[in-house]
Length: 252
Image (cartoon, rainbow, N blue to C red; front, side, top):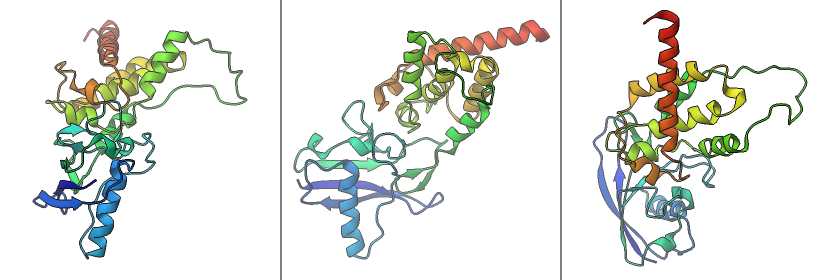
């Protein structure tokens, strides 16, 4: 396959960026999207040019670092797929592909296709800890977990923190990410002691960095793990409950 690429190049956070055109020739349809970029970078290195900077780690759809906008779609044209697991057979010979980083003020470009996702780290940090007895390992079945709760928690825990939800949302909201990170704990018995304090802390930290959710649903469509926006509703419910509990205690 021979492809024409338009890639966003930006030397640093304060530099002026722009698109630059490249040719990707002889690409195997079985290559992954990142392997295609590897091939382009090899030719750039041979030509003495700076390679395209992009994030990656596991290349197994687990770490969430690989996300980029491909022809305007987070992670590209294949639903439920991270960029690293997108294969070139989803494109046609001769296609023109535009590649750019996530676009959100809360996630500034570091270089080329790499963005700063540390705002997500602040949300996770705000969640604090889970209270649990330490010592000898408890029996695996000592805490009964309803099957429905376990399955829903696992669905939420599949979030890889790639930020496709933020990139897809017209408001740059992070509600799907935050809801998934909250609810995979709040749905389980082990997550109950800090359930409401965790919810308030994470939601209010999220609101410092990201826009508001107005139920466009773009986040769910863009998510490579197909996480449902139902989790946002559950998060909102827990947030309202937390506010009510606070009012009962303090009258404010």
